[in-house]
Length: 270
Image (cartoon, rainbow, N blue to C red; front, side, top):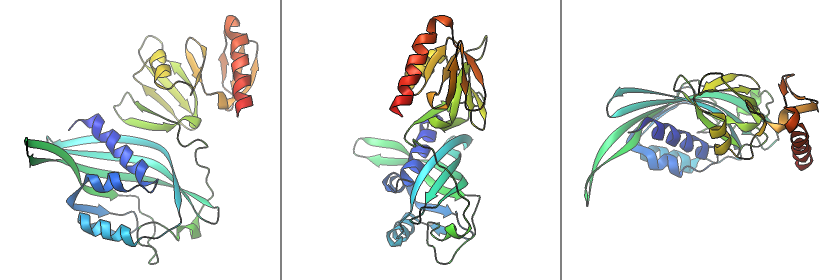
C-alpha cells in the first residue's frame, strides 16, 4: 500500500462523502468495519449496519469542504493509519452555515483476495474514528441536523472546487482552498516554496515553475520569485502590489504594464 495513494484516496472519500456521494466510502470499507463518532457515544460495526443506517437517514443539509491536512503512520507492513484534519461547513435550509473542525482517523489494512487470475492485494478500511465529538442529540441519526441550535456563523471557501494539494517539508499532505492563499514565494538557495495563507504559512518541496504548471490559471506570476492570488490584490502601483493582509510584493519595471493589465482583467471577470 503506497502512502501517497492512500492519503489521496482518503481525501477523495471524505470530499465525495460531503457531496452526499457515499459510493467511494462504501466501496472502501471492510465487512467488519468499525465506525466511531462524530456524535458522542455513536458507534456502529459492520458494513451492512452502516448501509442500513444511511438508508434511513433523511436530511436537507449540504456541505462545503475546507482545507485538509493528512498524516500517515505505518505500525505494520500491511496496515496504515491515515489521520485527516479538516474544516467542513454545514449549510442548513434556514440559510445558516456552521463550521466544524474535524479529525478523522482511518485504519487501512491490506487484504489478500483470490480471483480468477490469482491473488491480489486490496486496501480496505477497518476503522473510522471521528475523535473531536459534538454533543449527541437523540433526534439525529448520522448527520447533525439539530446542531444548528448552537451554531456560530461561518464563511466557506468562495470557490470550493479550486484546491491545491501539496506535500509539506514534514511529509504531511495538505489540500488547501486556493482562495485562502495570498501568495507563494521561493525559498532562497533551496528547491522549496513558502505558501502564505490568510491564517497560516506552509513550506513545501517544489519549484515555482513546477507549481505554476500544476495549477494554471490559479495564480499570477508577478516576479521571478513570487506567484500571487489576484483575488487578494488590493492595490497596484509602480512598482509593487499590495495584498489584502498589507503585504507588498515587488513588480519588475519591465513587467509592470503587463501585470497591471492582467490584474484589471481578473477584476473585470470577477
